[in-house]
Amino acid sequence: MSQSREGAILASWQHNAAPWSDLVRRHGIASRRHTDPAIVQAALQCQPRSVLDVGCGEGWLCRTLAAEGLQVTGVDAIEALVQRAREQHPLGHYQCLDYQALAEGALPGRFDLAICNFSLFGDASVSRLLQGLHRQLNDGGTLLIQTLHPVTSCQGDYRDGWRPGSWQGCDGDFRDPPPWYFRTLGSWLKLLDDSGYRVTLHEPLDPHHGVPLSALLQCRPDHLLHEYHKS
Image (tube, rainbow, N blue to C red; front, side, top):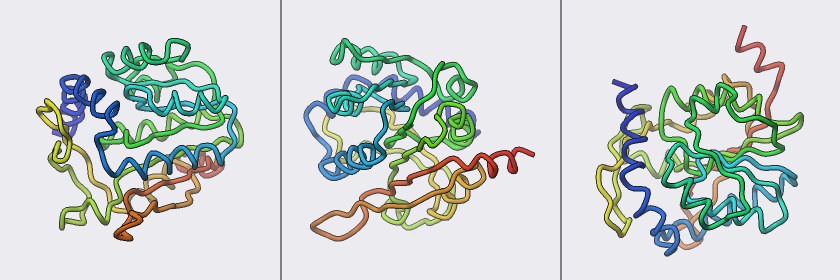
């Protein structure tokens, strides 16, 4: 069942690549007025020279960081999104790779910073990816994850598990929303610890209501811890 849900995530994004790209272009998601600057600021504070954007979508973050003089590579499993990214950023570097291929080392090279910005929806696929990203990071590198804050996105059920997706609040010709795997904050921290990372948590707030808009996890590979969990 979990595998079929993982497949449904990709199928949904394949169906909805065009309206999603249009929504991003129109700045159609209100919360992103705060979460977009949060991930850009967090990335720049790491002072990387090279960046890997995992689940880059139509490439807005790649374009933003490239404009800051960084060497950026974007990967996404959805060919239509990768093509849109290439069209908008002809000098950029984009590849169509799913998380399984990325976890298995299909992308050559290493990076100072890897970013997963609202791009981790699955269960087993996310666990494999986090393990595999160790080989993509230079010594001293960082992984940044921004995701829905578990407290404000739990919908009254604060337990790990698959949840139905929704396009509520997204204006456009969307259909078949992707399912997603909900993790409590404790489960995120345990997953990252099990994957060999030391984590610092940041919580970007809605400036008007004072509630967290996202969980922003700054993860430093601990190679000794990583080897311990593998053994």
